[in-house]
Image 1 (cartoon, rainbow, N blue to C red):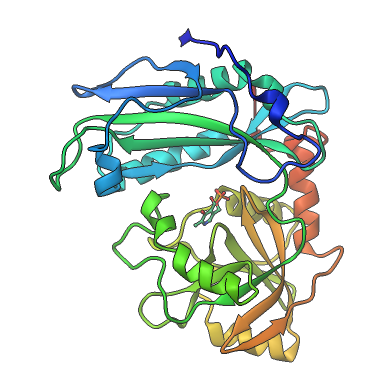
Image 2 (cartoon, helix red, strand yellow):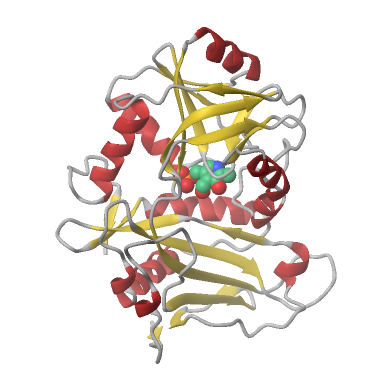
Length: 347
Ligand SMILES: Cc1ncc(COP(=O)(O)O)c(C=O)c1O
């Protein structure tokens, strides 16, 4: 693979003692183009501008999908990525829905591996820190006609990050806006899903919430997922989470937590959850805890749920399922416990 090293590193500008989320981008990118019906080889380049003009298809028609994953500094100072084959699979599920050519597995994995090797100094060493990896895939022909692009670009940028939420979060049950409808693109990690959700989230944030808890498009009666995380509830000591559908992103953190829950003999229910059931459980105390699950959010305890202008408090137990999951996942990710499920891909 061709590797072009930057002449001017930005590494010294990063305050590793105070990492936010997603602001400082690492020195290099991986970039690979799809032209005339096939993928090129791909190369590592210094971070910089695209060469395309304003006719860029993705900007007009939104044929654009992405992934979010992380690389972790191991106890022995080596680096490992969490379940990259799951992100590859989901990227290509998203691509298929958006009529974008799938990215071959070797391009995806080699691109990630070589990029992380080149920018290995960007992988932080602090507690709860990691290198966030953002593979993305977009239509890159230049024309203005509403038809699929002929050319596509697959690229990866990375960014050293800390925790997205260092405290418990408040979510608002969304009763008017909709994130995704049946038959739509909710299950794809399509760029437009996020653009379309910002207004509802912005309104919820103005009201003092961190995120929206989406409900179904038809009646707003069933819980779906939160802004950038799947959700789970501990109801009468059972782990209950909305069943996946074509409106919900199949989270890799969700899958990992359900795998651990099975291992720990926790009773799991993947099913439709009525908003009314949640509100009743909040009132009668049968909701033991609630949490979000996602790459950026990791495991985020939910301490408040807003519904109909009321805010209900949710218990945040110190040794509940959420905190135990968070610890167990963290130990696997940083190489501090046995990787029983072979989740870590070592660079
Ligand atoms: C809409 C949405 N749901 C769920 C998730 C959680 O998915 P994962 O655990 O794979 O990060 C994310 C985060 O990427 C998301 O953006």
